[in-house]
Length: 373
Ligand code: MG
Image (tube, rainbow, N blue to C red; front, top):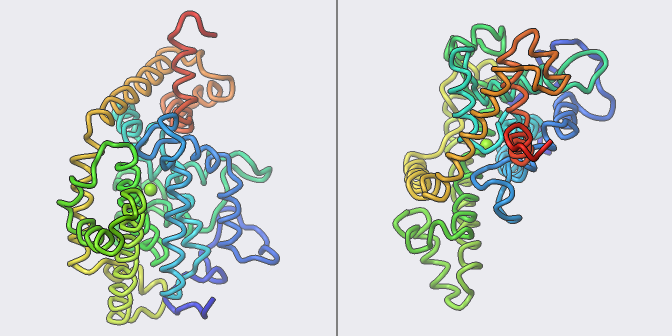
């Protein structure tokens, strides 16, 4: 790895952990965070959580786990080029969806509706709750006790009301400052990963067609070139090659535009980065192309009637679980029931958010099917 840029996050100058620990040997503080995330229970559960397609719909679709790995891959590539801290970017990327409920956004929206009278439910805030409190793997403390920089990156969005309760890590949502470049990068790598893999999964599922996607400039241009160059390659390989080129265009544009913005702002430290406007960005032109693709996916994939059927089922499952537990917390497994004695609705939300798709379906059956125990 080239020398770190002066504006990169530096593990030797970390703002530290909530519970002070001795320095790790043989790895830096951000590597240690990455390792703690990979070994957490919440990380393993990502394998069985929906990205767009419910886990049992097919073995080839992205799950939150493979999505998170693709985000980390893209983010690390750009981090290396910009001389940012690769380990921090990887840690943030791998942790960014840890707070996601079962059934993707449908589950999160349903849980948020249930929690409205009790402080709401935000999945970014939940990701921070997972790493700060909910993982119970250490003798000395709850949570994974990660560095400030990793926690700052995990908390991508936060309402001002909740931010005010979080101390240091929430301050930027009140003062409207930025997080590290590593965090800004993980955020945009997330976008590059999902728009591209959703094109791939969307076509494979048969919910969107190549013909429809030809209305999207970013896809159409690369697809035309691929078909002209390899007319007999078959649709599947032509789509893979097209998606590969789309990822490449977005990654290169993001890298180049960010280099220009960083050179212009010339931040001398991570604190300069925090005070500056966003410095990781697409060019206007490529940003508009990415936005067109996002709109297409929203209209044609995320709102496809077959996805919406799943969405409405998911919302009903989450809501039914929540209502049943809220009405009678004695139905909760012991460990969660004990937590519910202190804060009933938050404990129920934590329990449901931690479920995988199939666990939620099973738990729903156990609660509502009379022939199930
Ligand atoms: Mg994501």
